[in-house]
Amino acid sequence: MPDQPHNPIDPRPLGVTGILASPITLGTSFLGAGTSPGSADEAAAVELARAMLHGPYALIDTSNNYAKGRSEEVLGLAFSSGGAAEGRSIVTKVDEDPATRAFDRDRVRRSFEESCRRLGVDRLGLLHLHDPYSITFEEAAAPGGAIAGMIELKEEGLVDAIGIAAGTVSLMRQYVATEAFDVLLTHNRYTLVDRSALPLIEDAVNLGMGVFNAAPFGGGLLARGSASGANYAYTASPPELLEWVGKVEHLCADHGIELPTAALHFSLRSPLVDSTIVGISSAKRIDQLERMRQTDVPASFWEDLEALGTPPSNIAD
View (spheres, rainbow, N blue to C red):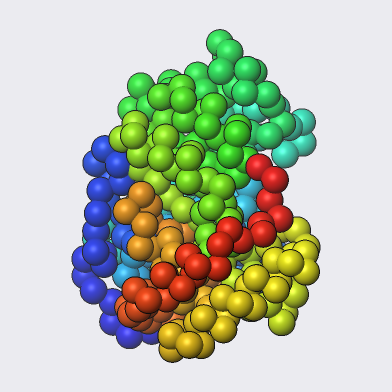
Protein backbone atom coordinates (compact mmCIF):
# COMPACT_ATOMS: atom_id res chain seq x y z
CA MET A 1 0.00 0.00 0.00
CA PRO A 2 1.38 3.46 -0.86
CA ASP A 3 2.38 5.86 1.86
CA GLN A 4 -0.65 7.33 3.52
CA PRO A 5 -1.10 10.96 4.63
CA HIS A 6 0.03 11.73 8.15
CA ASN A 7 -3.33 13.33 8.94
CA PRO A 8 -6.64 11.60 8.25
CA ILE A 9 -8.29 12.52 4.97
CA ASP A 10 -10.91 15.28 5.03
CA PRO A 11 -11.56 15.32 8.80
CA ARG A 12 -14.97 16.59 9.86
CA PRO A 13 -16.79 16.81 13.20
CA LEU A 14 -18.94 13.86 14.23
CA GLY A 15 -21.97 15.82 15.34
CA VAL A 16 -21.17 17.78 18.48
CA THR A 17 -19.05 15.03 20.06
CA GLY A 18 -15.71 16.72 19.41
CA ILE A 19 -14.58 13.54 17.63
CA LEU A 20 -13.25 13.90 14.09
CA ALA A 21 -14.26 11.44 11.39
CA SER A 22 -13.23 10.92 7.77
CA PRO A 23 -15.75 10.52 4.94
CA ILE A 24 -15.12 6.75 5.14
CA THR A 25 -14.82 4.64 8.28
CA LEU A 26 -13.37 1.14 7.94
CA GLY A 27 -15.50 -1.73 9.21
CA THR A 28 -14.06 -4.89 10.74
CA SER A 29 -16.98 -7.29 11.22
CA PHE A 30 -15.00 -10.21 9.74
CA LEU A 31 -11.51 -9.24 10.89
CA GLY A 32 -9.84 -12.25 12.54
CA ALA A 33 -12.81 -14.53 11.91
CA GLY A 34 -11.81 -18.20 12.21
CA THR A 35 -8.25 -17.43 13.26
CA SER A 36 -6.44 -18.90 16.25
CA PRO A 37 -4.00 -17.07 18.53
CA GLY A 38 -0.45 -17.35 17.23
CA SER A 39 -1.48 -18.70 13.82
CA ALA A 40 -0.32 -17.47 10.42
CA ASP A 41 -3.91 -16.44 9.67
CA GLU A 42 -3.94 -14.30 12.79
CA ALA A 43 -0.66 -12.67 11.75
CA ALA A 44 -2.19 -11.78 8.37
CA ALA A 45 -5.23 -10.29 10.11
CA VAL A 46 -2.98 -8.24 12.38
CA GLU A 47 -1.17 -6.87 9.31
CA LEU A 48 -4.50 -5.80 7.86
CA ALA A 49 -5.42 -4.14 11.16
CA ARG A 50 -2.10 -2.25 11.11
CA ALA A 51 -2.90 -1.03 7.59
CA MET A 52 -6.23 0.29 8.88
CA LEU A 53 -4.67 2.01 11.89
CA HIS A 54 -2.08 3.70 9.67
CA GLY A 55 -4.37 4.25 6.69
CA PRO A 56 -6.07 7.36 5.36
CA TYR A 57 -9.21 7.32 7.49
CA ALA A 58 -9.73 8.52 11.04
CA LEU A 59 -11.92 5.80 12.52
CA ILE A 60 -11.98 1.99 12.62
CA ASP A 61 -15.32 0.41 13.52
CA THR A 62 -15.60 -2.85 15.47
CA SER A 63 -17.83 -4.50 18.09
CA ASN A 64 -17.68 -6.80 21.08
CA ASN A 65 -19.26 -9.65 19.12
CA TYR A 66 -17.58 -9.24 15.71
CA ALA A 67 -15.92 -12.54 14.78
CA LYS A 68 -16.78 -13.76 18.29
CA GLY A 69 -14.45 -11.18 19.81
CA ARG A 70 -11.55 -11.86 17.48
CA SER A 71 -11.98 -8.55 15.65
CA GLU A 72 -11.19 -6.61 18.82
CA GLU A 73 -8.39 -9.01 19.77
CA VAL A 74 -6.68 -8.59 16.41
CA LEU A 75 -7.05 -4.81 16.54
CA GLY A 76 -5.59 -4.89 20.05
CA LEU A 77 -2.58 -6.88 18.83
CA ALA A 78 -2.03 -4.44 15.97
CA PHE A 79 -2.34 -1.44 18.26
CA SER A 80 0.01 -2.85 20.88
CA SER A 81 2.69 -3.72 18.31
CA GLY A 82 2.48 -0.73 15.99
CA GLY A 83 0.26 1.89 17.55
CA ALA A 84 -1.90 4.07 15.34
CA ALA A 85 -1.14 7.03 13.12
CA GLU A 86 -2.02 10.42 14.49
CA GLY A 87 -5.77 11.07 14.42
CA ARG A 88 -6.75 7.40 14.06
CA SER A 89 -8.83 5.64 16.69
CA ILE A 90 -11.04 2.60 17.25
CA VAL A 91 -14.78 2.75 17.84
CA THR A 92 -16.48 -0.29 19.34
CA LYS A 93 -19.88 -1.42 20.59
CA VAL A 94 -21.37 -3.21 23.57
CA ASP A 95 -23.38 -6.35 22.79
CA GLU A 96 -25.79 -8.70 24.51
CA ASP A 97 -24.42 -11.64 26.48
CA PRO A 98 -23.78 -14.32 23.82
CA ALA A 99 -24.93 -17.12 26.12
CA THR A 100 -27.92 -15.67 27.97
CA ARG A 101 -28.86 -12.75 25.67
CA ALA A 102 -28.99 -10.52 28.74
CA PHE A 103 -28.61 -6.86 27.84
CA ASP A 104 -29.04 -4.75 30.93
CA ARG A 105 -26.89 -2.22 32.73
CA ASP A 106 -24.58 -4.90 34.12
CA ARG A 107 -24.10 -6.55 30.72
CA VAL A 108 -23.27 -3.16 29.17
CA ARG A 109 -20.48 -2.71 31.70
CA ARG A 110 -19.15 -6.25 31.25
CA SER A 111 -19.17 -5.87 27.48
CA PHE A 112 -17.29 -2.57 27.78
CA GLU A 113 -14.71 -4.19 30.07
CA GLU A 114 -14.27 -7.15 27.70
CA SER A 115 -13.71 -4.80 24.78
CA CYS A 116 -11.19 -2.68 26.66
CA ARG A 117 -9.26 -5.78 27.68
CA ARG A 118 -9.10 -7.07 24.09
CA LEU A 119 -8.15 -3.68 22.69
CA GLY A 120 -5.63 -2.99 25.43
CA VAL A 121 -7.15 0.34 26.48
CA ASP A 122 -8.66 1.82 29.63
CA ARG A 123 -11.24 4.07 28.02
CA LEU A 124 -12.85 4.77 24.66
CA GLY A 125 -13.68 7.85 22.65
CA LEU A 126 -16.96 6.45 21.31
CA LEU A 127 -18.97 3.41 22.36
CA HIS A 128 -22.22 2.24 20.74
CA LEU A 129 -25.13 0.27 22.14
CA HIS A 130 -25.36 -2.43 19.48
CA ASP A 131 -28.39 -4.33 18.14
CA PRO A 132 -30.55 -4.30 21.29
CA TYR A 133 -32.97 -6.83 19.81
CA SER A 134 -33.05 -9.27 22.74
CA ILE A 135 -34.80 -6.66 24.90
CA THR A 136 -37.71 -4.29 24.42
CA PHE A 137 -37.12 -0.57 24.25
CA GLU A 138 -39.00 -0.25 27.54
CA GLU A 139 -36.58 -2.67 29.19
CA ALA A 140 -33.61 -0.77 27.79
CA ALA A 141 -34.99 2.54 29.09
CA ALA A 142 -35.96 1.26 32.56
CA PRO A 143 -33.82 1.84 35.66
CA GLY A 144 -30.94 -0.63 35.53
CA GLY A 145 -31.40 -1.01 31.78
CA ALA A 146 -28.94 -0.81 28.93
CA ILE A 147 -29.38 2.92 28.39
CA ALA A 148 -28.59 3.61 32.04
CA GLY A 149 -25.43 1.55 31.69
CA MET A 150 -24.32 3.58 28.69
CA ILE A 151 -25.00 6.88 30.42
CA GLU A 152 -23.06 5.74 33.50
CA LEU A 153 -19.97 4.94 31.42
CA LYS A 154 -20.06 8.42 29.94
CA GLU A 155 -20.70 10.16 33.26
CA GLU A 156 -17.79 8.27 34.82
CA GLY A 157 -15.47 9.48 32.05
CA LEU A 158 -14.83 5.97 30.72
CA VAL A 159 -16.15 6.99 27.31
CA ASP A 160 -16.37 10.42 25.71
CA ALA A 161 -19.50 9.80 23.67
CA ILE A 162 -22.18 7.12 23.33
CA GLY A 163 -24.07 5.95 20.26
CA ILE A 164 -26.92 3.72 19.20
CA ALA A 165 -26.21 1.27 16.38
CA ALA A 166 -28.84 -0.98 14.81
CA GLY A 167 -31.01 -1.41 11.75
CA THR A 168 -34.74 -1.35 12.48
CA VAL A 169 -35.86 2.21 11.87
CA SER A 170 -38.91 2.29 14.14
CA LEU A 171 -36.87 0.99 17.07
CA MET A 172 -33.97 3.32 16.39
CA ARG A 173 -36.24 6.36 16.36
CA GLN A 174 -37.28 5.50 19.92
CA TYR A 175 -33.65 5.39 21.07
CA VAL A 176 -32.80 8.63 19.29
CA ALA A 177 -35.84 10.34 20.84
CA THR A 178 -34.45 9.75 24.34
CA GLU A 179 -31.75 12.34 23.55
CA ALA A 180 -29.38 10.18 25.60
CA PHE A 181 -27.10 9.36 22.67
CA ASP A 182 -24.50 11.43 20.86
CA VAL A 183 -24.20 9.35 17.68
CA LEU A 184 -26.41 7.29 15.36
CA LEU A 185 -25.21 4.31 13.31
CA THR A 186 -27.72 3.02 10.77
CA HIS A 187 -27.13 0.37 8.11
CA ASN A 188 -28.62 -0.86 4.82
CA ARG A 189 -31.42 1.71 5.01
CA TYR A 190 -29.91 4.73 3.32
CA THR A 191 -28.57 3.45 0.01
CA LEU A 192 -29.24 3.53 -3.71
CA VAL A 193 -32.08 1.04 -3.20
CA ASP A 194 -33.49 1.93 0.24
CA ARG A 195 -34.12 5.38 1.73
CA SER A 196 -36.20 4.31 4.73
CA ALA A 197 -33.69 5.64 7.29
CA LEU A 198 -34.00 9.23 6.07
CA PRO A 199 -36.51 10.33 8.77
CA LEU A 200 -34.34 8.63 11.42
CA ILE A 201 -31.21 10.38 10.19
CA GLU A 202 -33.05 13.70 10.11
CA ASP A 203 -34.16 13.16 13.71
CA ALA A 204 -30.55 12.56 14.73
CA VAL A 205 -29.16 15.57 12.86
CA ASN A 206 -31.81 17.85 14.36
CA LEU A 207 -30.56 16.78 17.80
CA GLY A 208 -26.93 17.48 16.90
CA MET A 209 -26.01 13.81 16.79
CA GLY A 210 -23.22 12.47 14.62
CA VAL A 211 -24.31 10.07 11.88
CA PHE A 212 -22.63 6.95 10.54
CA ASN A 213 -24.21 5.29 7.51
CA ALA A 214 -23.06 1.69 7.18
CA ALA A 215 -23.29 -0.93 4.42
CA PRO A 216 -23.61 1.34 1.37
CA PHE A 217 -23.34 -1.78 -0.82
CA GLY A 218 -26.21 -3.52 0.95
CA GLY A 219 -24.06 -6.44 2.01
CA GLY A 220 -23.25 -7.47 -1.56
CA LEU A 221 -25.84 -6.55 -4.17
CA LEU A 222 -24.56 -3.05 -4.93
CA ALA A 223 -20.96 -4.26 -5.02
CA ARG A 224 -21.53 -7.28 -7.26
CA GLY A 225 -24.41 -6.13 -9.42
CA SER A 226 -27.79 -7.47 -10.45
CA ALA A 227 -26.44 -10.43 -12.44
CA SER A 228 -24.93 -11.85 -9.25
CA GLY A 229 -28.33 -12.23 -7.62
CA ALA A 230 -26.61 -11.26 -4.36
CA ASN A 231 -28.52 -10.66 -1.16
CA TYR A 232 -29.51 -7.22 -0.02
CA ALA A 233 -29.36 -6.58 3.73
CA TYR A 234 -28.88 -10.26 4.61
CA THR A 235 -31.97 -11.43 2.71
CA ALA A 236 -32.61 -12.68 -0.83
CA SER A 237 -33.09 -9.95 -3.43
CA PRO A 238 -36.50 -10.26 -5.11
CA PRO A 239 -36.72 -10.13 -8.93
CA GLU A 240 -38.13 -6.60 -8.97
CA LEU A 241 -35.17 -5.33 -6.93
CA LEU A 242 -32.67 -7.03 -9.22
CA GLU A 243 -34.45 -5.54 -12.22
CA TRP A 244 -34.30 -2.05 -10.70
CA VAL A 245 -30.60 -2.41 -9.92
CA GLY A 246 -30.10 -3.49 -13.53
CA LYS A 247 -31.58 -0.16 -14.63
CA VAL A 248 -29.17 1.66 -12.33
CA GLU A 249 -26.29 -0.27 -13.91
CA HIS A 250 -27.36 1.00 -17.32
CA LEU A 251 -27.37 4.54 -15.96
CA CYS A 252 -23.89 4.02 -14.56
CA ALA A 253 -22.64 2.81 -17.94
CA ASP A 254 -24.20 5.84 -19.64
CA HIS A 255 -22.37 8.16 -17.23
CA GLY A 256 -19.03 6.34 -17.28
CA ILE A 257 -19.04 5.11 -13.69
CA GLU A 258 -19.40 1.74 -11.96
CA LEU A 259 -22.28 0.64 -9.73
CA PRO A 260 -20.17 0.34 -6.53
CA THR A 261 -18.85 3.88 -7.06
CA ALA A 262 -22.39 5.21 -7.39
CA ALA A 263 -23.45 3.29 -4.29
CA LEU A 264 -20.59 4.70 -2.23
CA HIS A 265 -21.16 8.26 -3.45
CA PHE A 266 -24.87 8.09 -2.66
CA SER A 267 -23.86 8.09 0.99
CA LEU A 268 -20.77 10.29 0.69
CA ARG A 269 -22.66 13.12 -0.99
CA SER A 270 -25.35 13.42 1.69
CA PRO A 271 -24.90 16.43 3.99
CA LEU A 272 -26.71 14.41 6.68
CA VAL A 273 -24.03 11.69 6.85
CA ASP A 274 -20.76 12.37 8.66
CA SER A 275 -19.06 9.10 7.73
CA THR A 276 -19.85 6.02 5.66
CA ILE A 277 -18.79 2.67 7.12
CA VAL A 278 -17.42 0.13 4.65
CA GLY A 279 -16.21 -3.30 5.72
CA ILE A 280 -12.92 -4.43 4.20
CA SER A 281 -11.02 -7.71 3.97
CA SER A 282 -7.66 -6.59 2.53
CA ALA A 283 -5.26 -3.65 2.55
CA LYS A 284 -5.74 -3.42 -1.22
CA ARG A 285 -9.39 -2.62 -0.58
CA ILE A 286 -8.39 0.58 1.27
CA ASP A 287 -6.68 1.84 -1.88
CA GLN A 288 -9.69 0.85 -3.98
CA LEU A 289 -12.04 2.74 -1.69
CA GLU A 290 -9.91 5.84 -1.86
CA ARG A 291 -9.90 5.72 -5.66
CA MET A 292 -13.67 5.32 -5.63
CA ARG A 293 -14.03 8.22 -3.22
CA GLN A 294 -12.04 10.47 -5.53
CA THR A 295 -14.01 9.46 -8.63
CA ASP A 296 -16.22 12.23 -9.98
CA VAL A 297 -19.87 11.24 -10.33
CA PRO A 298 -21.68 13.58 -12.75
CA ALA A 299 -24.63 15.55 -11.40
CA SER A 300 -26.65 14.27 -14.35
CA PHE A 301 -26.36 10.73 -12.95
CA TRP A 302 -28.24 11.73 -9.81
CA GLU A 303 -30.91 13.43 -11.89
CA ASP A 304 -31.38 10.30 -13.97
CA LEU A 305 -31.41 8.12 -10.85
CA GLU A 306 -34.18 10.25 -9.36
CA ALA A 307 -36.20 9.73 -12.53
CA LEU A 308 -36.23 5.96 -11.88
CA GLY A 309 -38.57 6.53 -8.96
CA THR A 310 -38.76 4.75 -5.63
CA PRO A 311 -36.65 1.59 -5.54
CA PRO A 312 -38.42 -1.66 -4.56
CA SER A 313 -36.51 -2.37 -1.35
CA ASN A 314 -36.96 -5.71 0.38
CA ILE A 315 -36.70 -4.15 3.87
CA ALA A 316 -39.96 -3.67 5.76
CA ASP A 317 -38.58 -1.59 8.65
